[in-house]
Length: 279
Image (cartoon, rainbow, N blue to C red; front, side, top):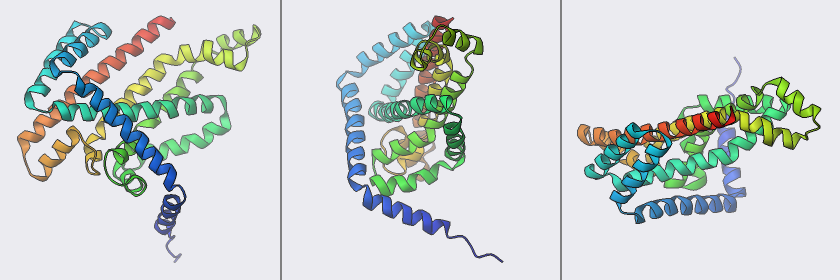
């Protein structure tokens, strides 16, 4: 019988080496992410809750329709009434930070993979691993590299939420009709012109769908992220589970549902408007 492969030992050794070698880089990332999240919370918290509710409701009405605007008004007022306003702001900051990082890394990676078959063959199995690995596993290296708090929660959310952005960016660009690509090449367009003026505009609805999925996945990580000290509504749900407080857990879960529906509908309608603008 073959001896067991020491995969766990290899991973532990790799984590220890990375922790010792890139300590300064990890400290810089931790400080930067923490500052960004705190800035969003402070900025949103500076606005009175009733005023922010009105602004968000009007924004939802403008982007979607009056039904979503009314839902935003009632849903956000309910969150404020239940006493989860501060936790809601922390959750939104966590999700926005995670999604922004996913976009900044994921869209260029998707563009690169769409232009290179070799890169796509390397990226695809990595994305498969990221999407199938249990989310709890991501918390372990995040804790080692960034201690506990909001930063490991953001990093775990980024790893969990980034694959849809990359995959749908690749898909959107690859689905651009070949005859349009041939026409741009016939007119002497460079690769950069073809990408920026033809492929990306036509792929934008699909890319927005990927961003929408990344937002939903990042939001689904808030409870798991609370296990490593990330603040927000997930902390309330986790505390309710550990203390067997069904009512409190339902209230916090209801607040998460309201935020999820609003973010989903808003990003979906932005994607539809992008599609309408490219037709």
